[in-house]
Amino acid sequence: MKYRAMGSHGPLVSAIGFGCWPMGAEDYGPIDDREMALAVDRAIDVGVTLFDTAPAYGHGRAETVLGEMLGPRRKDVVLVSKCGLHWDWEANPRPFRRDSSRAAILDGPGGLHEQLRRLRTDYLDVWMVHWPDVNVPFQETMEVLVSARDSGKVRHVGVSNFSPPQLRACKQLAPLVTNQVGYNLFDRRWEIHAFETCRELDISVMAYGSLAHGLLSGTWDRATRLDATDWRSRGMAFRQPLLTEENLPQNLDVVDRLMDVAARVGVSLPQLALAWVLRDGVVATALVGCRRPSEVDDNLGALDLSIDDEVLGELDGIMQGAAGQVQELPA
Image 1: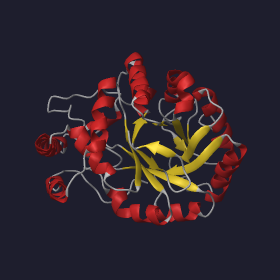
Image 2: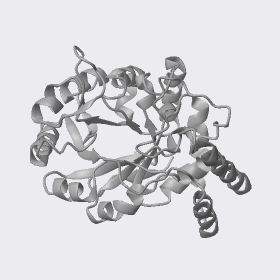
Image 3: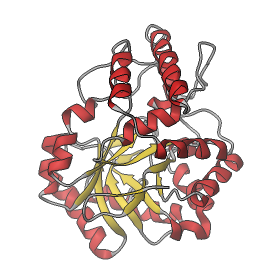
């Protein structure tokens, strides 16, 4: 495993992180918890230290399951979770609502106290705001993050999906070490709009969706059918219609061409895709959701791959054929 610093004052983390959204068992179809537990153990065995989760993943289930799976190995990992998305069990638990007020992020069902209980830990290594809440002053939210850090309940703080102006405002109020954003060959919006600001502010990027939410996994083909409970079945990937009936066939053609490049280079498609994400030094970790140990092992091959300029140019050319890409950041 290779490791990267999260900002100049944040933790040292594995360049490949374990994304735990599928553990919620609500948004990615059926999950085999036993196989997932083996993947978690394998990841720790090979040096993966960063595990990323959130209350919104399965209404707390992902945090509960991860806490159980880590057990005594919790001390060996950098545990990351988020705040600011909430639900009401007595009313309709969906859609989640954004609420980054002091009361919500401390005492709500998605608040810190419940998070620590579910994860079976006394502290989080990194606690971040999941999405910006424009209805609550950033000062109020950042004060809670700083207070939680000062109390020892969290060690570092960050944000997710925050635009450059929002980053600048919050960095003045809290020692942010990371901004978690979507980043992959099909989605370069944050690279275009925010990476330079992150570098300027000493904020590292945690990249989610590194395999384009499965499109770059090498396992999709024209016969792939997603479970109705799978969020990707609706065709949208964070406001990009990459997976719609109209655009998916064209994007699978693009994937075929990427697979040809990967084969020529001598790696798997996921390895090529992850190496591409990690080529930018502002990225501290590339998050990948793994359902089984074999996927963990395959991802490791990305760490030894350096993509030369010729191949990078070829990849850029191939991606010109993608359908459904947009320029606006998800808000």
